Length: 204
Image (cartoon, rainbow, N blue to C red; front, side):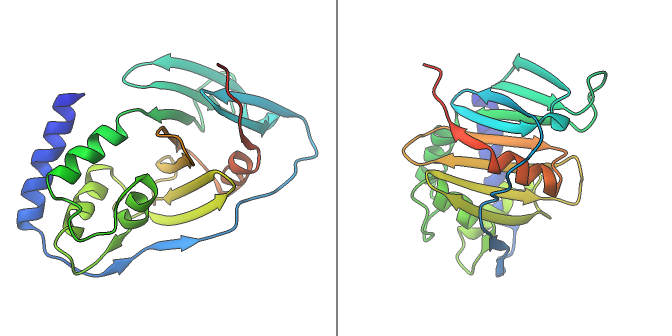
């Protein structure tokens, strides 16, 4: 994982040196979904994140522990169609601190995970903004539409890209360092179901 961070750091240094700066704001805010489903629900728990999802969303559940612990659900019991993957981003704070020390955020109001994601979708006339543009490229979210929504301790960022299988939701929880990433084939209905049934339920 350290090699990956160093590779990203090198890419950013080159990108910052060569890229122009321009102004852009792609952040939209919306209300947290609150749909109540009348049908049967399945409870899915990933670390401390608990979700109550319509049974039609949960045909198959697969758990693995590769680079990060992750859990995947698909609608079809027999195949991996319409997969949604849950991951915990353990190394965000370490990587964030590395970039901060290198001056990539200089001049920008970035001091925690929420302010990082707020700024990730915004370009300004500040030189440091180019580093965020490079990060979007590395994260393959250049062309995404960004939506932010909050409820209680939860803050969620939906990055809606042109690729139907490349949708991403980042979930932040107040007072906790961990960031949850939910990625895959996430429709508008899926987004509503994922957030409306989301709570914290510690298994420890």
